[in-house]
Length: 354
Image (cartoon, rainbow, N blue to C red; front, side):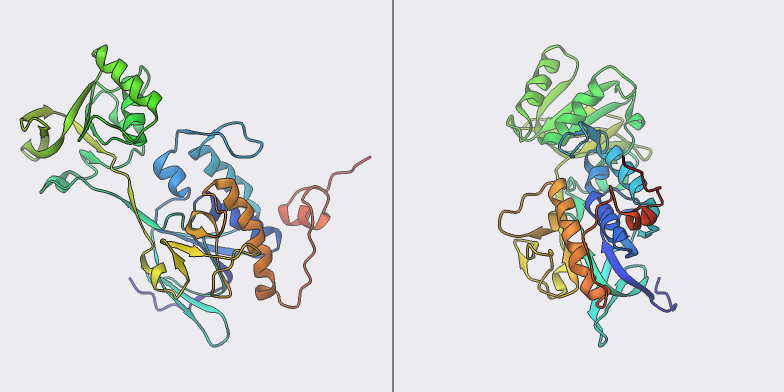
């Protein structure tokens, strides 16, 4: 719904509330820059929450291991002093340079901003799961057909069919087979061929469980379904032998990967290379002064798609934005360990050293 309220005036708008977008809030906050954050999802965390909320991450500096959910929660705790405003469930549809040098930004919900800078931290872009194309099956989306697992406990004790041949399909199949609070009544893994794009150890473990008759694996493709009084009861799986078999189920989990799309970003006049935004490595600016890109959305020589690389980019982007936001202000590098000014910004006491 389009709003008729005046645009929100701000120094910075961050597009994307994944880990890198959240850390951008922190780096801007240290420089006393407040931000508004826009994300197409209804909650923070981005791909960490969408794809691997409960899987371990081992390459966050000084954190031996954490899950995607824990990383998100820790970042949210870290940025509390900076009072960022979040706008969830909306996508940026308009970005236009104004005469005064600021940007007019509007979202799919009609929320409007006038901002001095924009930080694009949109990961791979607005991503949607690749769907299983069987006519009429979308009737059961989010009731019996699922493309992501938000709460594993919802599937405990159920007869599950899992479709896919990547890490997500294998990981969740193994998760629902093992003893524990999420254990399913039965698990059948369906993949169009006997080869997998998953960790070899996971594939080997899956075959072990099949040999032990603790789960099943079928080579084939879902070609249809049967229902009873509006409830999905059976899938039709056509094998490589041309035979179609009926498989009973309570829920279908589909993991065909994500289809990343830049969406409206592609129309903002920014330099794009292979669906990524080209940036410099001094301040991670795009070709449009005042628009920065950090995290997986950007590309430059030597780019590595790592969360820790995105964190580094956030720091330099924040400093790169200072001449635009506070052109008269001299900026000195300060350390959170020793700077009374940063301690005040963070709301902590300055420690005394001997």
